[in-house]
Length: 475
Image 1 (spheres, rainbow, N blue to C red):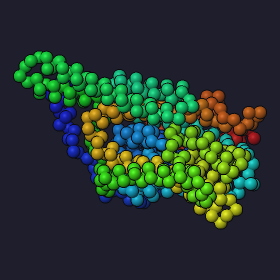
Image 2 (cartoon, one colour; image 1 turned 30 degrees about the horizontal axis):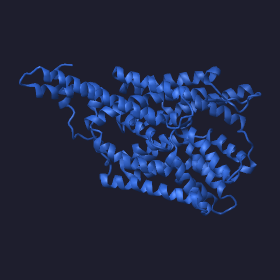
Image 3 (cartoon, rainbow, N blue to C red; image 1 turned 90 degrees about the horizontal axis):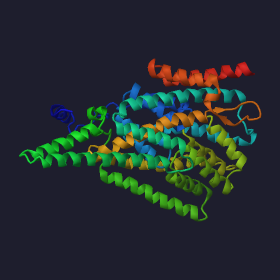
Image 4 (tube, rainbow, N blue to C red; image 1 turned 90 degrees about the vertical axis):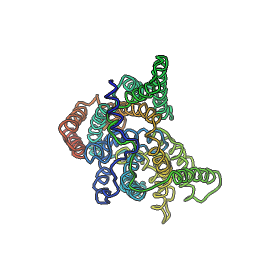
């Protein structure tokens, strides 16, 4: 890289340049138009949600650039709680502020919560299995979701993975996520590890090049050291990061002091939740305390929260194991976050009471609020310090590792995508590759959505229709 090129790049990246102000663009009509459809088509779990968000807010609406999306995704993956919900919340937070983001959360979570509260109200009339036609429809939508995740991984890779170190980190993080199971802190360790590697690499390169220049003994050695340090940083950053603004502009003003206040509120509420669980509290308080505690310590998202919720709600006699499995069957067949299962559990915990619906919303509030508080407190810190050289080096590795996790999600989702509907294995999950029709749905979704601009909601609906056609053929 020539000295002139480095100087031009450095000039093109003002340190105080901010994203175009979003405050005057943020409208609640637009918010509903963007998020409400997603609340009803987001089948396939958190991995598919990430793909939908990327398609909607980076590709289609261009609310945020790709590198900002990946950084937010890396932060969400590093926090306890539902990563996809926190990602969607953070996008809205940058767009329009706290109230705007809270309304986004309601749009995203309330539809699924209401449905699960209704299911809880009539749980005694349900069987342990879903209607056959619904299982076929969900299989089709899940297959389409795999295709969407695959195209999201591909597009993120083309934007973020720019050098050999990023390629290695992406591949290793994907391999670890696929191969290592049963380790709740895995994603956090992968992302932090990636950041540390690129930070150390950047500092070593800067020091090495600086040392070479110092040994030359010419009168301009200090200028050369600074120039080479800057060059090493430029090489460490992707082209998109160089073109992107250094700091995000909020649709509201929030000082770092208030950010620390929010993080303090999260910690105080966690202590209160622990106390509530330790004493003999009223059932309503116990719901909030237990769910808040779970939401504060769960790393790894929905797959990890399911067994922990089961141990809490069944052991405390809020419901039977059969009732929990019914709720689990429905949550796996519905759009939205798996954490919505807390609404079902909260409602059953207050069964027979006029407050049953309140119990559902208490469960939802308890399990989601820790992650949202943490994200609200950390986003201002991220916005303040992300332009620093050291922080940019760290995010380079975190972003590469995060993209690797998206690639891993394609495999993980595909391996447990299909629910066997007929035969002795009915009700078990199976690999997508064992079902040619649904493999074709995933492939066509990848091709049409990625290269022919087919909108994600249409792809999901086409997958659903294909699943129903498959049902009609086999019945």
